[in-house]
Image (cartoon, rainbow, N blue to C red; front, side):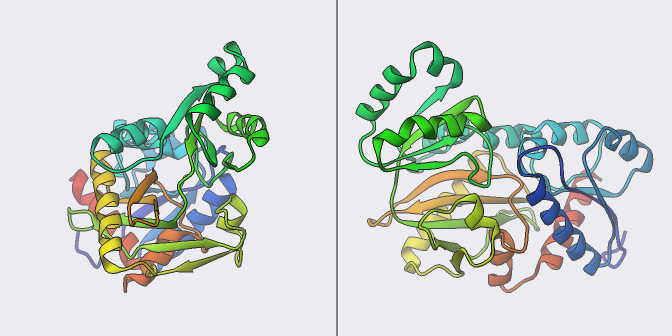
Length: 319
């Protein structure tokens, strides 16, 4: 098939996770960009009819724009691989590694990237050992401000910055609302960066680092998806040497987790210039206020060009 020939692409968006609305917005943006690139695009929800439909219709390629467990825990990606469906994105195994924040953090730390000190707690252990006793140990082990977050999930849902120790019990409840695992980690203060990585020629290439400055000081769900609540700098305002260290850390995290095609690595750079790994996203947000489209634009390209290369690469990989 020549590069001038449009492909039949099914963009998956929606799902039943807490991030359904964000996914629908991402899917529409991806579909629009692929239409602009000359492809034949259908937008579908991952419902009970999806797998039979794909098996019968056999589109050229699937582009998942799903967020939350419906797309990022690896299950759907493995099912698509099982029916030999060319798909943009990482393998199911890689997605599972990144989806579990404790697993991802451990692997990236072993590779040599700095990660915040943390304690990982299951909801079961939290109940059985007694919340008061557990939180007393946590406060003694991790001094200073804390960040409490679910062990899996995205868009900062269930994430709380704890500056007052009396707020810790409520933060744990919020985190357990979204996952049976909660992470309590020492807060790293500094410049928050998002580094998108794309693979359109067989090698991971970092895009322009985006600096994130929320008006409230916290990059919450509202700050991510409501225009005007966050200021972005692309390129970021850090010096070249510091940006190079952060980019190297992002690339190392991407490779360590075995990610493919498209990812976004989130980091905090402290006052000493050390980049600290926060998380990696295998299906990052692609909405009008998301970081990856901003990084694409700042890298002197456009979404239609990047997404076109991704779908063609997925087809070529499956040939």
